[in-house]
Amino acid sequence: MNPDTIPRDRLPALLCTAPKAELHIHIEGSLEPELIFALAQRNGVSLAYPSVDALRAAYAFTDLQSFLDIYYAGASVLLKAQDFEDMAMAYFHRAKTDHVVHAELFFDPQTHTARGVSFETVIAGLSRACERAQNELGISSALILCFLRHLSEEEAFATLEEALPFRGQFIGVGLDSSERGHPPEKFARVFARCRELGLRLVAHAGEEGPPEYVWSALDVLKVERIDHGVRSVEDPLLMQRLARDRVPLTVCPLSNVKLCVFKTLAEHNLPALLDAGLCATVNSDDPAYFGGYMNQNFVEVFDALPQLTARHAHQLMANSFEASFASDAQKLQWREALDNVFSPTA
Ligand code: HPA
Ligand code: ZN
Image 1 (tube, rainbow, N blue to C red):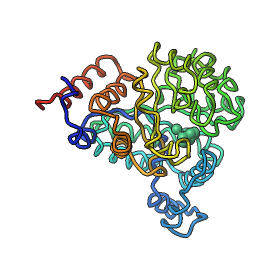
Image 2: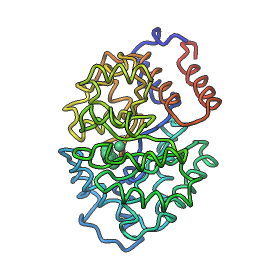
Image 3: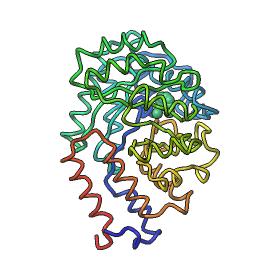
Image 4: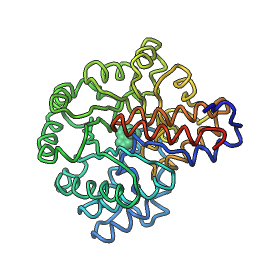
């Protein structure tokens, strides 16, 4: 396999058909406006927007917080296990067309328990969708429970208590929501407890927050992956550390532009992250809000950055498998399938 011999005009098709893993998708962020309205009607929930078009028109964000306000409002239509199952199945069907073979889904239980929806309801619907994704679509998946960082550590501990009877139904914990002013170390004790419990650990850091937040996610929380992490380039020592330990970054190009982390895709630092030897991956974050699912992210970022080559494409997909929490045997199978797609004789 030598991706360097693949011409650039073959890239869009290759990006779309190659097998890939998605590791940074907030399942509540896959709720399309049409489904929000359908669920609102089914559940008798009233919305602040008169139509699907009016809701979509409100998706003009200036920063992370301006997005989160509307994202939490959208999630208010989710009440029953069936709603969570329908939402996740819609995502899995979309992922299938993008040749996503494995997905690790974030979910935000506190967004739902705060509205009187039980943890059991949330996890029952999502778990059922994960089972169906395997049986009906051949997509493997896992769930990662995210703590909302704008809430207290005490509230995170209470959420963990509610979740533990369902310990077999999620593989790890993450940290999301408003980053600025809520550094990872605020959650040091609850992450330590999750680590003792054998949960896999990830955290959003270095999206809007400074490189110091990436350091403390690594050294205080002891996370295995950094979600976003694009501001790491501001700190050369941090870049060395991430490269040396092959700490994966789950990068989300379209999200970064929609939330004004970069002005345009042409200014995105994905090439710099890859060329520094980091295990960077491409992901969709909140695809219903940010203008596209996996393949849209790949195609647009490669289109905007001509220095990205077929070798980078292969590396990104290989990184997605390496960075996943799947077994080594499974990773090897995916890697062989990927190499076949990139072999010039294929
Ligand atoms: N950042 C932080 N929290 C989030 C995001 C994000 O991109 N999406 C959903 N919750
Ligand atoms: Zn995210």
